[in-house]
Image (cartoon, rainbow, N blue to C red; front, top):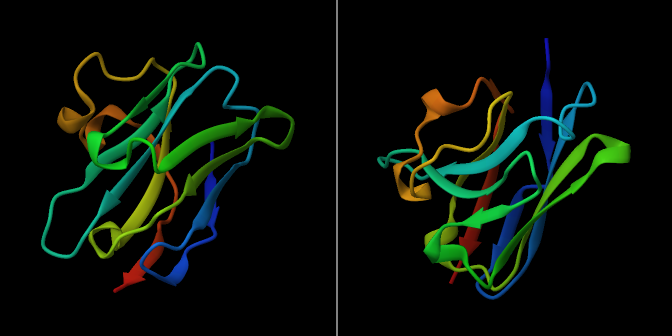
Amino acid sequence: RVTLVQSGGGSVQSGGSLRLTCAASTHTFTSYSMAWFRQAPGKDREGVAGVDTDGATTYADFVKGRFTVSLDNAKNTAYLQMNSLEPEDTAMYYCAIDAYSLPRRPINEWTSRFFGYWGQGTQVTVSS
């Protein structure tokens, strides 16, 4: 069974940066797709970014140009570098992986059911 452990959340001011980390218990990122989701209070969980099994990346429009997802396969770790953060980015952020390719639909249609393994979540708070 794969476990994902997240770290790196916190509080920053608008315009600041944070890097989230998602460490896997096994060599998963070489053959699994992975994604970052977020969920703000009172809102549905939404896809933020993903890396497919071939290394192709996908980003939600609201983070394009600001967030970057990357993998370090040697460390079994995924990262989400978040720059130019805005108060609207405040949410609990989750990493997730699945043995299949990323969903063949727009990222705004991704839901939890497409990914079988989840991190515990990490809070990101951006103040204005």
